[in-house]
Length: 285
Image (cartoon, rainbow, N blue to C red; front, side, top):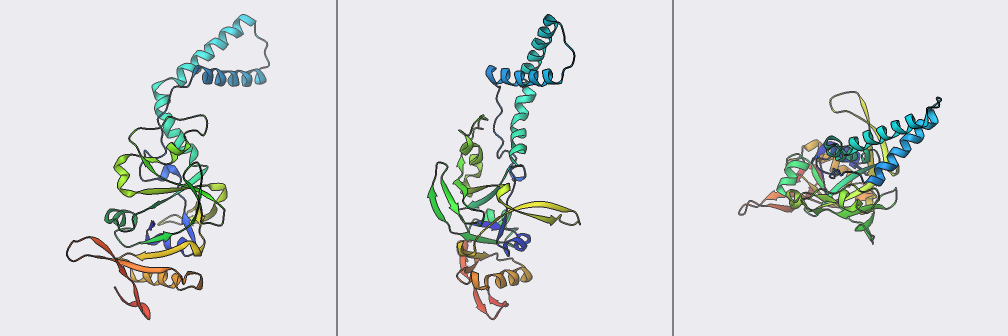
């Protein structure tokens, strides 16, 4: 299930779901693994690469003993820099910003009737919730979900763990970094789809309240994978009509439509059928 605010309907109507770079997720700890002090081998490699750059750019031949002394000083400076508290502390933030230029995330949940999520992610019940189904193929990460025109994208269930993840120089810990959250978020039962931006659909979108155009990335979905849509109980009439019209198109005739209500005895959020009486304005909600 995907919670959506009313302003996302303009994309949803075109079978697009917004991809969010990690830096813009609502929890600033997401995709921000703990930094670590590089090994001596890694420091030596960085130093050698730096020395190669100096050699290629140097046009002055220095005495051997002087050059060696400078090399040692440069090595000591590199080691001091990458082992400093400031460097290690900022490594996670750097990683978070860097990967945000390569892929985006679609967050989903197993819970379509979460009061907290309706309040936060669906703008106090003014938005809607979309249910998707997809073919599954087991992979090393969890499973591959085939629900978009760009081909398979990697999806997995989030694991909730209190510790940060160590940054690795290879892909050994990619699942821990990309699909981990603090236990405080466990109630959301989140699943994440990770999609490379180069495989996504890019659009120029106006910034809210202004004329500036911003580049945004989207994950397309096929109409046949949309199973149901739950209309928010506080959805504005115009938004409700647009969503109803969209689901009236031939390719969405199979999609079930519903809404929510407050149970009169328990006060819990419960599902309720959405019945048509000619137009949305005549719906009995």
